Image (cartoon, rainbow, N blue to C red; front, top):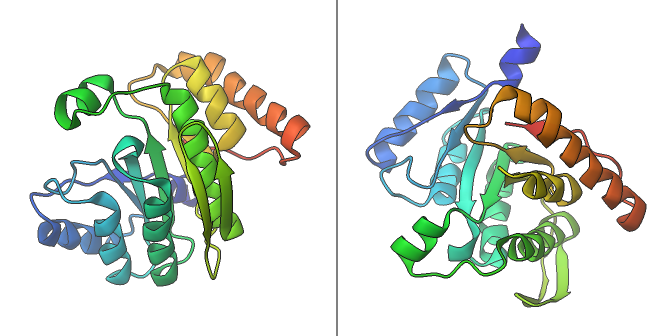
Length: 216
Protein backbone atom coordinates (compact mmCIF):
# COMPACT_ATOMS: atom_id res chain seq x y z
CA UNK A 1 0.00 0.00 0.00
CA UNK A 2 2.89 2.38 0.67
CA UNK A 3 3.80 2.21 -3.03
CA UNK A 4 0.37 3.55 -4.00
CA UNK A 5 0.31 6.03 -1.13
CA UNK A 6 3.45 7.65 -2.51
CA UNK A 7 1.82 8.08 -5.93
CA UNK A 8 -1.57 9.39 -4.84
CA UNK A 9 -1.96 13.13 -4.41
CA UNK A 10 -4.73 15.43 -3.30
CA UNK A 11 -5.99 18.72 -4.67
CA UNK A 12 -5.93 21.60 -2.21
CA UNK A 13 -8.06 24.74 -2.26
CA UNK A 14 -8.13 27.73 0.08
CA UNK A 15 -9.50 31.26 0.19
CA UNK A 16 -6.04 32.85 0.47
CA UNK A 17 -2.34 31.98 0.66
CA UNK A 18 -2.21 31.94 4.47
CA UNK A 19 -5.09 29.45 4.70
CA UNK A 20 -3.58 27.43 1.88
CA UNK A 21 -0.25 27.20 3.68
CA UNK A 22 -2.00 25.90 6.80
CA UNK A 23 -3.57 23.15 4.72
CA UNK A 24 -0.28 22.15 3.11
CA UNK A 25 1.49 21.95 6.47
CA UNK A 26 -1.37 19.92 7.94
CA UNK A 27 -1.48 17.58 4.95
CA UNK A 28 2.20 16.78 5.36
CA UNK A 29 1.75 16.21 9.11
CA UNK A 30 -0.85 13.47 8.47
CA UNK A 31 1.21 11.69 5.82
CA UNK A 32 -0.01 13.09 2.51
CA UNK A 33 2.84 12.71 0.01
CA UNK A 34 1.86 15.20 -2.69
CA UNK A 35 -0.56 18.05 -3.34
CA UNK A 36 -1.75 19.58 -6.61
CA UNK A 37 -3.11 23.06 -7.26
CA UNK A 38 -4.88 24.64 -10.19
CA UNK A 39 -4.42 28.26 -11.26
CA UNK A 40 -7.38 29.23 -9.06
CA UNK A 41 -6.88 26.89 -6.09
CA UNK A 42 -5.43 29.40 -3.65
CA UNK A 43 -7.79 32.35 -3.77
CA UNK A 44 -6.57 33.50 -7.17
CA UNK A 45 -2.92 33.69 -6.01
CA UNK A 46 -0.07 32.76 -8.34
CA UNK A 47 0.23 28.99 -7.94
CA UNK A 48 3.96 28.61 -8.49
CA UNK A 49 4.78 31.47 -6.12
CA UNK A 50 2.59 29.81 -3.50
CA UNK A 51 4.36 26.50 -4.05
CA UNK A 52 7.72 28.15 -3.37
CA UNK A 53 6.49 29.50 -0.03
CA UNK A 54 4.89 26.15 0.87
CA UNK A 55 8.11 24.31 0.03
CA UNK A 56 10.05 26.51 2.44
CA UNK A 57 7.56 25.74 5.23
CA UNK A 58 7.51 21.94 4.76
CA UNK A 59 10.01 19.11 4.72
CA UNK A 60 9.19 16.49 2.11
CA UNK A 61 5.72 16.84 0.57
CA UNK A 62 5.73 17.17 -3.22
CA UNK A 63 3.83 20.06 -4.80
CA UNK A 64 2.41 20.18 -8.30
CA UNK A 65 0.79 22.69 -10.62
CA UNK A 66 -2.23 21.44 -12.52
CA UNK A 67 -1.79 23.50 -14.57
CA UNK A 68 0.20 26.68 -15.24
CA UNK A 69 -1.34 28.50 -18.19
CA UNK A 70 1.52 29.04 -20.61
CA UNK A 71 0.04 31.87 -22.67
CA UNK A 72 0.15 34.20 -19.64
CA UNK A 73 3.75 33.47 -18.62
CA UNK A 74 7.01 33.47 -20.60
CA UNK A 75 8.89 30.14 -20.38
CA UNK A 76 11.99 31.82 -18.96
CA UNK A 77 9.89 33.34 -16.17
CA UNK A 78 8.48 29.88 -15.44
CA UNK A 79 12.01 28.47 -15.45
CA UNK A 80 13.18 31.13 -13.00
CA UNK A 81 10.32 30.39 -10.63
CA UNK A 82 10.94 26.64 -10.88
CA UNK A 83 14.64 27.23 -10.21
CA UNK A 84 13.70 29.20 -7.09
CA UNK A 85 11.63 26.25 -5.92
CA UNK A 86 14.50 23.85 -6.68
CA UNK A 87 16.87 25.88 -4.53
CA UNK A 88 14.44 25.62 -1.62
CA UNK A 89 13.28 22.03 -2.12
CA UNK A 90 15.11 20.07 -4.83
CA UNK A 91 13.11 17.21 -6.31
CA UNK A 92 9.76 18.21 -4.85
CA UNK A 93 8.14 20.16 -7.71
CA UNK A 94 5.91 18.64 -10.40
CA UNK A 95 5.50 21.31 -13.05
CA UNK A 96 2.27 20.85 -14.97
CA UNK A 97 1.79 23.22 -17.91
CA UNK A 98 -0.83 23.64 -20.60
CA UNK A 99 -2.51 25.97 -23.06
CA UNK A 100 -5.75 26.18 -21.05
CA UNK A 101 -9.03 26.71 -22.89
CA UNK A 102 -10.00 29.18 -25.58
CA UNK A 103 -12.86 30.51 -23.45
CA UNK A 104 -10.47 31.22 -20.57
CA UNK A 105 -7.64 32.73 -22.57
CA UNK A 106 -9.74 34.80 -24.93
CA UNK A 107 -12.61 35.57 -22.57
CA UNK A 108 -10.63 36.34 -19.41
CA UNK A 109 -7.25 37.52 -20.68
CA UNK A 110 -8.02 38.65 -24.22
CA UNK A 111 -5.24 36.40 -25.58
CA UNK A 112 -5.81 34.51 -28.84
CA UNK A 113 -4.90 30.84 -28.86
CA UNK A 114 -2.86 30.58 -32.03
CA UNK A 115 -1.45 27.12 -32.90
CA UNK A 116 -1.77 25.84 -29.31
CA UNK A 117 0.12 22.56 -29.81
CA UNK A 118 2.89 24.29 -31.75
CA UNK A 119 3.11 26.94 -29.06
CA UNK A 120 3.24 24.27 -26.35
CA UNK A 121 6.04 22.42 -28.14
CA UNK A 122 8.22 25.51 -28.38
CA UNK A 123 7.39 26.56 -24.83
CA UNK A 124 8.39 23.16 -23.50
CA UNK A 125 11.60 23.16 -25.52
CA UNK A 126 12.65 26.48 -24.02
CA UNK A 127 11.55 25.51 -20.51
CA UNK A 128 13.20 22.08 -20.44
CA UNK A 129 16.44 23.36 -21.93
CA UNK A 130 16.61 26.14 -19.36
CA UNK A 131 15.91 23.81 -16.44
CA UNK A 132 17.62 20.57 -17.45
CA UNK A 133 20.59 21.97 -19.37
CA UNK A 134 21.02 25.33 -17.65
CA UNK A 135 20.99 27.18 -20.96
CA UNK A 136 18.77 27.74 -23.97
CA UNK A 137 19.30 28.95 -27.51
CA UNK A 138 16.02 28.87 -29.37
CA UNK A 139 14.86 30.49 -32.58
CA UNK A 140 11.34 29.50 -33.48
CA UNK A 141 8.02 30.82 -34.64
CA UNK A 142 6.79 31.77 -31.18
CA UNK A 143 9.99 32.32 -29.15
CA UNK A 144 13.45 33.70 -29.78
CA UNK A 145 15.42 33.08 -26.62
CA UNK A 146 19.06 33.17 -25.51
CA UNK A 147 19.74 32.58 -21.84
CA UNK A 148 22.18 30.85 -19.50
CA UNK A 149 21.73 29.89 -15.85
CA UNK A 150 24.40 29.19 -13.26
CA UNK A 151 22.86 25.83 -12.35
CA UNK A 152 20.37 23.20 -13.47
CA UNK A 153 17.07 22.04 -12.00
CA UNK A 154 15.76 18.68 -13.19
CA UNK A 155 12.11 19.45 -12.58
CA UNK A 156 9.64 17.02 -14.19
CA UNK A 157 7.50 18.84 -16.75
CA UNK A 158 4.02 17.47 -17.44
CA UNK A 159 1.53 18.46 -20.15
CA UNK A 160 -2.19 18.92 -19.85
CA UNK A 161 -3.73 16.56 -22.41
CA UNK A 162 -7.22 15.57 -23.55
CA UNK A 163 -7.06 14.65 -27.23
CA UNK A 164 -4.85 12.00 -28.91
CA UNK A 165 -2.55 14.58 -30.50
CA UNK A 166 -1.92 16.22 -27.15
CA UNK A 167 -1.11 12.87 -25.53
CA UNK A 168 1.31 12.07 -28.37
CA UNK A 169 3.08 15.42 -27.88
CA UNK A 170 3.20 14.76 -24.13
CA UNK A 171 4.90 11.44 -24.80
CA UNK A 172 7.40 13.06 -27.14
CA UNK A 173 8.37 16.11 -25.10
CA UNK A 174 7.26 15.80 -21.48
CA UNK A 175 7.61 13.60 -18.42
CA UNK A 176 3.92 12.78 -18.21
CA UNK A 177 0.36 13.89 -18.80
CA UNK A 178 -2.32 15.53 -16.69
CA UNK A 179 -5.77 14.49 -17.88
CA UNK A 180 -9.19 15.77 -16.92
CA UNK A 181 -12.52 13.92 -16.95
CA UNK A 182 -11.20 11.19 -19.26
CA UNK A 183 -12.78 7.72 -18.96
CA UNK A 184 -10.45 4.95 -17.80
CA UNK A 185 -10.89 3.01 -21.04
CA UNK A 186 -9.88 6.04 -23.07
CA UNK A 187 -6.75 6.56 -20.98
CA UNK A 188 -5.72 2.92 -21.25
CA UNK A 189 -6.58 2.28 -24.91
CA UNK A 190 -5.97 5.67 -26.57
CA UNK A 191 -3.99 8.01 -24.35
CA UNK A 192 -1.20 5.71 -23.18
CA UNK A 193 -0.55 4.21 -26.66
CA UNK A 194 -0.33 7.73 -28.08
CA UNK A 195 2.14 8.74 -25.37
CA UNK A 196 4.23 5.64 -26.01
CA UNK A 197 4.25 6.41 -29.75
CA UNK A 198 5.42 9.96 -29.01
CA UNK A 199 8.17 8.65 -26.75
CA UNK A 200 9.36 6.23 -29.45
CA UNK A 201 9.46 9.06 -31.96
CA UNK A 202 11.57 11.12 -29.57
CA UNK A 203 13.93 8.22 -29.00
CA UNK A 204 14.37 7.62 -32.73
CA UNK A 205 14.80 11.23 -33.78
CA UNK A 206 16.20 13.08 -30.77
CA UNK A 207 17.97 10.20 -29.02
CA UNK A 208 15.93 10.60 -25.86
CA UNK A 209 15.46 7.53 -23.68
CA UNK A 210 11.95 6.09 -23.38
CA UNK A 211 10.51 7.66 -20.28
CA UNK A 212 8.50 6.18 -17.44
CA UNK A 213 5.47 8.43 -17.38
CA UNK A 214 3.86 10.05 -14.44
CA UNK A 215 0.20 9.81 -15.42
CA UNK A 216 -2.44 11.81 -13.59
